[in-house]
Image (tube, rainbow, N blue to C red; front, side, top):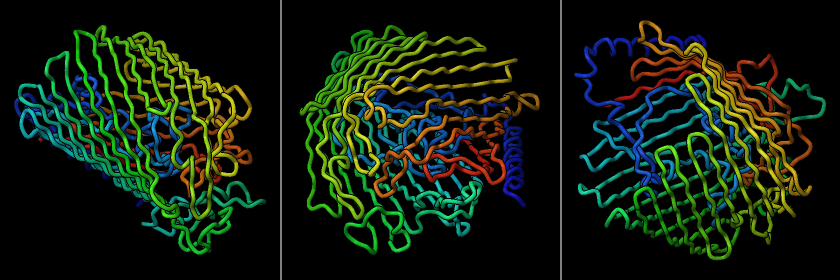
Length: 613
C-alpha cells in the first residue's frame, strides 16, 4: 500500500478520534476551564526592553504543512534541496552581531537561540505535539510542554527532531542524509510583589549531515539522468556535524518604574566537524590535500561568554536602557596550535517612545572598543514603517585564518561596513491587504568566498536595491490569495557587485480555500503554495568549510515549485496532507545550487494535537 493511502487512512483515524472526543464534551465552558485563552507567552527581549505584553498561543493551523526550515523562513533561506541540509540567506542582511564570531553559519537556522525561546504563563499544563511523517524516509517531531508551578513560576521544555534519509543514491531505508536533535529547557520566575524577574534557559543542537557533494555531472549525460534517484553523487564517506550548547541567565530588579537594574549572562559552545574517512574514494572532489592523504578530520570549537549589566526604566510612554557588556571568545582547531583568545568590551543604549499600542519610535546602538558598532532607529505605525541602520562589524574567525586538511590561509581583512534604509506602506481592510516595501543597502569592503573557495574582500562599495510587494486578497470569505514579490538590483563597483549572488526576481504565492464543514465542526483548508526564483549564478557549496563560494560555470535555471495541501482542524486536533513538488514531470527537476537538486515529488502527512491538561 502506498504512503499516500496509508496517510489518508491514518488521517481519517485521527479525525474520527477528534470528532469522538469533541462529541463527549457537553459544554466547553463548564468542562474545560482552561485553554488557549488562558495560556500566554513572551520572549526574552520583551522582558528586557519592557515590552512586557503577553501573547496568546496560536491554536489555528496556519501554515502547518510547511515542515522544512526553508519553508518556515518563507524561502528567504535556501537549503541544498533536502530536509536538514545547509542553508544560506537569499538576500543580504547586515549583521546584528557585530563582534567576533566563528563564521560557521550554514546550520545556524536550526539552532534555537536565547532570543527565540518562548517563556509561558499558563493556568494549566500546555502541551502541543507535532508529528510529520514524510515520504522517502523523512520525519519531523516537535514536542513542547510547560506549566506553572505556582502563579509566579513557570517551567517547560521544547524538543525538535529531524530525520531524513538520502533522497539520491540511497542504499535503502535508514540510510541517513540528515539527523538533527534540538531542545531547550526554560524557567521564568517573578516575585509576588513584581519587583524581581528572572529567566533561565539551556539549549542544545546536535546536527549531523552525511555529505554527498551534489550530483556527479559528466559531459554527455542526458539532463534527465541528474534527477534519477540512483544518480551518482560526488562524495561517498563525508560527514559534517554542528554541535551547539547554550546557557542563558537573566535577572532584573525594579526599584521604581523609572529605575530598574538588570544583568544577563550567556555561554555558547559551538563545535564544528568535517570528516571523510577513508579519503580514497572521494579524492577527486578535493582541490588539494595538505596534511593527511588517508582521511580528513577537520574540527574546531568556539566558546563564547558574555556578561551584560544595565539600567533601564519607564517614564510614562518613554523607555530607556543603557548597558555595558564584557565578552570573551576562545577558538581552537585540531590543526592550529594553541587557543585564539578575543576580549571585547562594549556599551550601548535603547530609547523608545510608545505613542500607543500601534505606534512607536526608537533609537538604539552598540559600540565595541576597537571601532565596531551598530546604531540606528525605526518608526512604526499601522500605515507605514521606516528604518535606518549603520553597521561596522568584525570579520569572522574563519575568515581571518584557517588551517585544515584541504585549505590554508592567513588574511588581513578590512572592516566591512553597511548602511541600510528601508520602509513600507500598509493598507488593509477585511478583503485586502497591500504593503509595498523597499530597501537600499550600501555595503563597503564586503567579505565573501571567492572562486578559489577562500575568503576574499571586495574593493569599493555595492548598492543593493530591493523593491517588493505583499498583496493579499480574500473573496467571498472562503478564497484567499497571498502574494510576495521582490525585485533586486545590485549596482556599484564591479568586484563588489560580483560578490553578491541574488536572484533578480523572487516570488512566494499561496492560493487556498478555507471554510467550515459539517455544521461548523471541521475547518478545511485546500490550497497550493508556489515559489519562484529567476535564473542566476548561485554560489556553490563547500562542505569542508560549510561555506558558499563564487562560481560562474553553473547557471541555476529559473523554476517554479508547486506544493498542494489539505489541512483539517477539529477543536485542538489539526492534520494535513501535502504533495510537495507536485508539478515535477517525469525524469525532471530543478537545481538549488550547482550540483544540488531540489526535493523530488513526495507525499507528507502531519498531525498536531494540543493538550491543556
